[in-house]
Image (cartoon, rainbow, N blue to C red):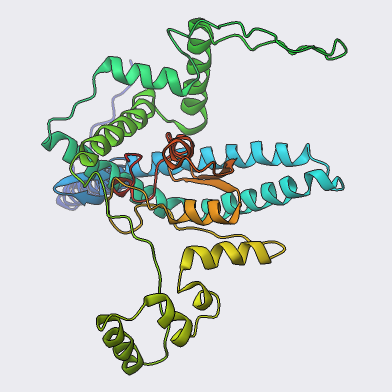
Length: 390
């Protein structure tokens, strides 16, 4: 039987050393635990700040309603995506044109300018989006105050129309042929109306692309159309509150150099002298002086004398809301025999288009109705100020 070596007694020094080692291990454990907790806290706090606090922080507050950074960033990405898509389409159209063809020179120049404007627009997409979201929130709040609502059915119809789908398309009416048709001309097929299946496919594909490329939800996408409807309904409500007619003024002027001369002209006018005679005698405006100070007639004659001339007229509603349109541009064009080109600055789609050309017929009401039709779906920069009402 093996001998068992007797256990040596533990000395006080050994006990003290073991106790000291245990205390050190406990301290190291506590320090390690605190360090790990601190690391987890820092990482957690950083994650919270980056993915919760920052996205939720407001970039703007509109009458107590916050616009979150998350929503703002999503809209910036969407608007930039739309601009890039528009630029790509415009570039494709430009590439299809022949710059050496004189008949296409104007179109080439126009498309180049439009592409440059769109690229410039991309540089300010952040600020433009900020303004857009603030305006949309103001419109929603005012609509709520007035009891204006958008139903689910109205929203769905708006989306369908924007995608080119009409639930109840008009029945095509055949046009009777009253003239001899050249048999060498190949008739072009009429494009069939979009079906519900085609709409659902196009809509689903577009929403899926937004979700994949931008992480842009369908709910946010539909909210864009809802904002557009609120804008339209509020605009209609505001249009009923502004004057429906305005005083028509035939503008004439007498241009003089000093205030004293102007006072002298006023005194002679008050004394009964003829405005036209005074204009011819005193006005320094050589363009209108011989026409009795008539600005419309002087502009018409300026058109007649010039080889080429373009007169740009500021859009309606640049300063205040008004249901009537100024008519001076029409009568200048009528007197000059000059065409009116409808240039549409649509801030809703961020596009500029030369929509059509009209030669005045003399029937102001009929021509104005046609002119306004070119602006029916456009959104102005100051949306509340623009109206198609007469």
